[in-house]
Amino acid sequence: MKSFEYTRPTSVQEAVQLLSAQNARALGGGTDLLGIMKDALLPTDRVVDLKGIQGLDHIKDDAGTLAIGALARLGDIASSSLVSQKAPALAQAAGLVASPQIRNMGTLGGNLAQKVRCWYFRDADRTDCYKRNGSYCYAVLGASDLHAVFGGAACFAVHPSDTATALSALDASVVVAGPKGQRTVPIASFFVGPDTDYLRETVLAPDEIITEVRVPPGALGAPSVFLKAAPRRSIDFARTSVGAQVVGTNVIQTARIALGAVAPTPHRATKAEAFLEGKSLAADTIAQAAELAADGAKPLASNAYKVPLIKGLVRQALTALAAR
Ligand SMILES: Cc1cc2nc3c(=O)[nH]c(=O)nc-3n(C[C@H](O)[C@H](O)[C@H](O)COP(=O)(O)OP(=O)(O)OC[C@H]3O[C@@H](n4cnc5c(N)ncnc54)[C@H](O)[C@@H]3O)c2cc1C
Ligand code: SF4
Image (tube, rainbow, N blue to C red; front, side, top):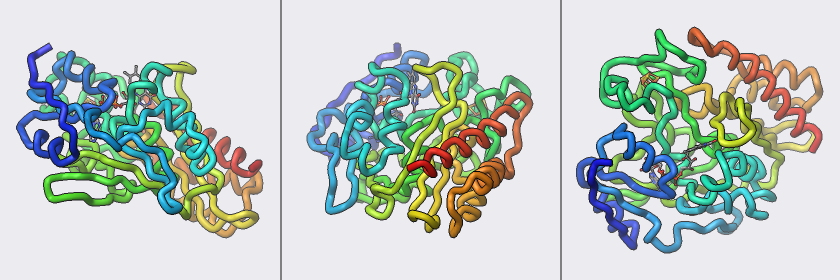
């Protein structure tokens, strides 16, 4: 591995200042970043280890809002009774990430800020891929099994984070700290696709970090669910996932359906959501919503299987919510 400077700040301000250097990168649990560094996928001259900062690993009820620090470990989120009770989809998503070892190291901030898993991006030799500041996408004419069916442009890599999908269905916000102070970004605006900038996956500037994720009171306690389809039952990224929440007892007031691993950002199935509002979760309504969830999908050469997967997972998720 190429040599680098290791730093361990003790405050958010110090971390942000250290990240202002060229090729400086934040370190959470390291389950993604260390692999990237070992394979030299992205230049890294300084590592800023956030784990020296106290008070960023909380999971708490903050005056009715569920507040989770960026350094909270996925395993702790999955096993938190507060999260399971208030935001079940998030607990389920955290519990389905990778393996117990990775969940015990991996943090929520790192899960949201992780890089894409496109097998060409992860191949050290493919230095001319757009995501590595090159000018070519191998997936367009190559193997596109893992790639986007919505919203691809120059790059068709999907966002791999399971918690991002659940948090999109829960209408969460991401608290970000940078040199100018703190800002709160709605999750719907936090992730960016290749049409905005194919070199990054989020709105984070190089010297900004996630400090907290907040789930608002309106979304808490209402039934929500996260489901993930992957070839292996453990240690596997989603081929497609769904986070869904309905608010309203007999008649749905608000429905949110977020799809994971089908687009460069978590993809909201807005037509299905609008269709569900004002209805109850009867079987025929669920079936129609599942069809609408895949509306607009444009598969590449080898990922058309994701379209029936979307429909099946949405049907399964809404059926589970109807039974609550
Ligand atoms: C074998 C394997 C299987 C995996 N399976 C899954 C899976 O099924 N689902 C899934 O969602 N993920 C999966 N992952 C991806 C990922 O490693 C973990 O999800 C983990 O949550 C990442 O968190 P971390 O703290 O280890 O991140 P790190 O590796 O420390 O960081 C990841 C990225 O986020 C940045 N970063 C870290 N913390 C912050 C912060 N607070 N603010 C801003 N940027 C930050 C880093 O600079 C880096 O770019 C898998 C990884 C591996 C190796
Ligand atoms: S999909 Fe994106 S990451 Fe993958 S080869 Fe194409 S440009 Fe690179």
